Image 1 (tube, rainbow, N blue to C red):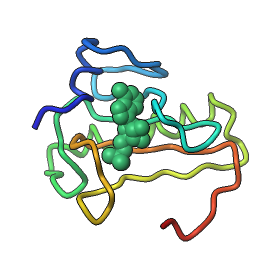
Image 2 (cartoon, helix red, strand yellow):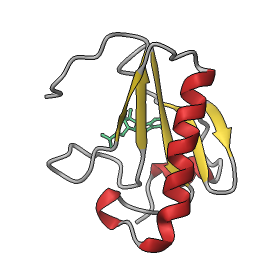
Image 3 (tube, protein in one colour):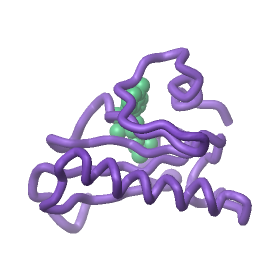
Length: 112
Ligand code: AMP
């Protein structure tokens, strides 16, 4: 399923890109929920965590590594939260797998 994130990958719509490689892309969330809020997505069109197959292991692993690296580059040495909203109950709005990284403030738990 194509989504707005496919258009960000293809550069049809602009984004504040923090990292790009052959497997994944990291860019700032357009509606930040914390002082630092960026998304890491695989370039492959994977709908959600619920749709992963064996061959996605490298892409998802890279996304998590890049989440960690970009978090460090963005100065989140005090910690951050990594979230993958999944499906309707998970509150997922964009049907392209994405990892949110939020930091720069004290985040409450549990989430709503
Ligand atoms: P989710 O609810 O987990 O599907 O989150 C989707 C996220 O994508 C939200 O935090 C949106 O603010 C973000 N988003 C939607 N469109 C864009 C865009 N064009 N550029 C950057 N972030 C976006």
